[in-house]
Structure formats: C-alpha cells, structure tokens
Length: 449
Image 1 (cartoon, rainbow, N blue to C red):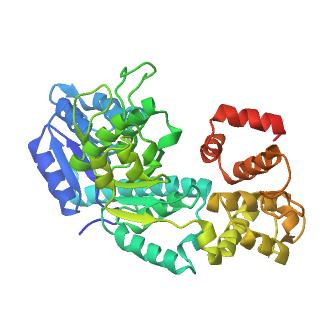
Image 2 (cartoon, helix red, strand yellow):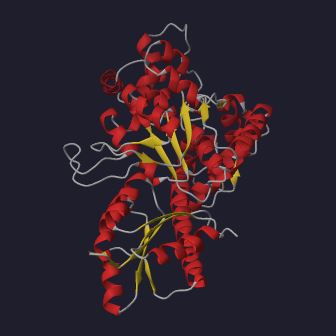
Image 3 (cartoon, rainbow, N blue to C red):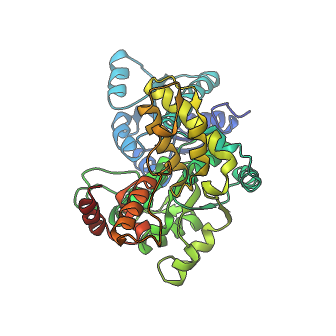
C-alpha cells in the first residue's frame, strides 16, 4: 500500500547488504523508488544523476565516516531529508548529525514499522514544505478563483480542455496576450495534476539574462564561471517529480533551446561546468505572447523544439473578449486587496461597474488587478467609485481623438500614458510601443509622465 505522502525517491547508503535489502524491501513495499549503494563514492555518483527526497546513511561505512557524506549530499540536493543509521545512538552523535544537516536518525536494530513511520513523517514534512512554498507563491501572485469559473463559452471550453490535459504528462503550450493569466492557468494545471504535491517552479525567460538562463534551469558546478562560488542545483532539479513552467519561452536563446530540447526528449541534462548526465522527472508547461511560428520562420526559434512543446496548445482569450467575467474577477481582487490592506469596501458602485465593463483592457487581467488594488488603497467610501479608478480607465470628457486638429505630440502623450498603465514594466511598454527603452525614457521625461 502506497503511503499518503506520495512516491518518494530514496537513497540508501550502507555497507551491510542485509540492511540495504531490508530497507529496500520495506520502502519499495510502500511504493517508493529506491537506490541502494555500499559507499560514499557510489552515493555521490547517484546523487549527481538523480534527485532524492530522502537518504538513509549508515554512520559506520567500511573505511569511511558516514557523517562526512551528509554535507556533499546536501550540496547536491539541499531539500533532501537525511536519516542517519547508527548502532550506538548518543546525544553527541545526534547533535553532530543534525549540525551537519541530518533531519533524523534511526537506531539498529530497527523494525519495518519504525521505518514506515519515519518515512511517512519525513514524506509528510516534504509535502508540507512544498505546500508552504505554493501558498507563498500563490499569496504573492494571487490567482482569482473566478478565473476557473467563466461565463464565456470559449473560456469554458478551454477550462475543460485543461482539466483533461492536466491529468496527463503532456507538454502544454499556453498562448495569449500579455497579462491574460497564463501563469495562473499553469499553476492551476499543476494543482489539478497528479504532481500537485510535488514542487512547481516558474522561470520567466525574459527576466533572466540569456547568459544566466541556462544556469538557472540546469544548475552549475562550483567554479563553472566567474561568480559561481558554490554549486547551484537549478530549477529542473528543484522541481523533481513536479512541474516546470517556462513563461515567455519565445524569448529563450537558441543555445538554451537546444539544451531544453534534449531534456524534453531524453529527460537528461548536464549542469554548467560538468560532463555528468543527470536525470529528472519533470512535467513542462510553456507560455508565449508572440507568434512562435513566425519566430521559427525568422530563425529565432527552433522548429524541432516548437513541435515538441506544441502538443496541447491553448489560446487564452484577452479580457475584452470575455466581458461577462470582468466583474467576478474584479470582486475577487477587491476581496484580496481589502484583506491585505485592512480595508472594508463592500463592492463597486454603478459608475465603477460601468467604467470597468466599458474599458478595452489592453493590459488584460494584470491591468485589472492593478486598477482594483489602486482603488482599494485610495478609496474612502463603502463602495469603489469611478473616481477611485485610474484616469486611463475612466473616459474623460473632451479627450482628443485621432483626426482632431491637434499636435501629434498630444496623441502620443495620451497613448504612452495608457500603455504604461496597461503594462507591468518599462521593458514591456517599450515593446508594445515599438520603441527602445531609452526612447521611451526620453518621451516620459519630455511629457512629465
């Protein structure tokens, strides 16, 4: 019977074959994956190739001190739980083991019941650590529940498709404009999947310089490059058994694309500065707001990688095409920001609702989130009114229009203000406007924005 903590990868290091066999049989009967070795060198070799959740280490290995193995193992996999096996447990031994990073110890002779209890306890701790990490990430990003409860027929079809796809290990490609909630969908797919109790890692490809993205994904050895003062496991190793979400994959450099393709095909990779091939069991979800087919044509995206990630492709519609969902999402944001800002605001009045439903939302859900957060913070009444919303959302009487007899600079200023309000960064705003960041900075300075 499999334990409630889910399947764990377990490493056993003991020079006694009977101990290795007994532990392996007990753990495999619980449904876990086990690798058993006799010495430190074999243990480190296995730890470099595979990511383990728990390691059992005998303190008295033949010609070696098992205590010395703990730090290098944890350097390979910092989240690993180490259990020391000892025939003569003392307080001093336990303290020294804990000081070096051990999580627990078990004394010989031990029973199968003791091993089962220990593995379930440590497995439960790993699950709780993963859940805490997810809760922290969810609190930081906040995904409105209404995102998965749409009144829009197209969105309903998309949600049903993702629910079915989540139960498989197929790669999913999420397409859509910036700010449509692709990262929210990726998190939800992970939570719906059989990997929900394992970690999910998010890597924003544009946010990491190309020269560092490879290290961020695959990790690096100490001294692999200037500044690599210690080993780095990488995001792939950190989400072993879970999900890796690559946001805006269209911005990934071609060299990194080649290594990602190899990992997708073979589930193998190397850290920077190493030649040893490592393995990882990770599900991939990707997202993009660009036309990948065009990038393939332009030679900026590998065609073979495109076909590998385009197994299940879903296009998330912009917010302006699902207006029936706007108020539900806005209410979720209102509740969240009222709680985090200790405000008591009942809802949106008629003027605010009209403004929210009439606006085109070029920045999609991200822009809606920013607008509601601002309204909650600045609002003084029981209801959010149109006066609490950003100027870019509330129509202004006499606002100049294209074709009016006015200087071009006036229209440019208005347009830049709206794009800045609808995007999350100067980099993104410059990309939308089709100008470089230095030019945008000069325009802002000229218009006093």
